[in-house]
Image 1 (cartoon, helix red, strand yellow):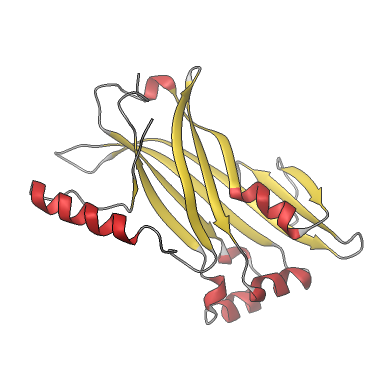
Image 2 (cartoon, rainbow, N blue to C red):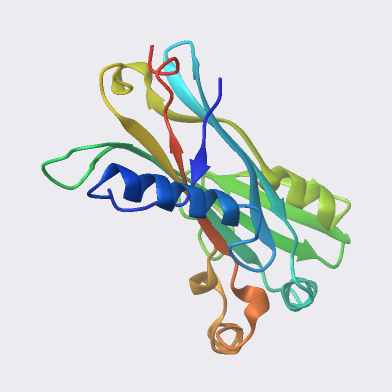
Length: 208
């Protein structure tokens, strides 16, 4: 299955405008959208009775972010995926939405990194319905965030064979979860500006 990953754009009025815009986007795809994060792979597959998403990020934390972690400040990431359907007469319709929340923290007493993953926002205390793991290194913990595999996006019935549909994927570092003093400081430091948005067109063979 071959799919194209492009930046999200408004529908062009003429066919030649669409081709020009597509060429421009493909030429710029190799560069990062924001500091520290790039999308290396995004694909959708139909497995059993569901549409699942696989995303692979190139994620590296800037020194200012690592320094905050070492000082005991947890970092939150949010990944979102929306299944959308084209509508020529109105705004595109949202068919399904799924979200993953990540909370990464360093525990100085044990010298371990703790990562929590949840489908719901993770409270400040780090409790709730999240799944937690501990790691010996920061890289090992980040690998879990980088590889988002088997992510159930929608039921198979939501993927219509005769409709034009696409997935809108977004990933960001959630600065709103930082303590207030860090929020104010982070606004002036580019190392905290970490996020991207990509669109993946659902291929016809995936919809069957």
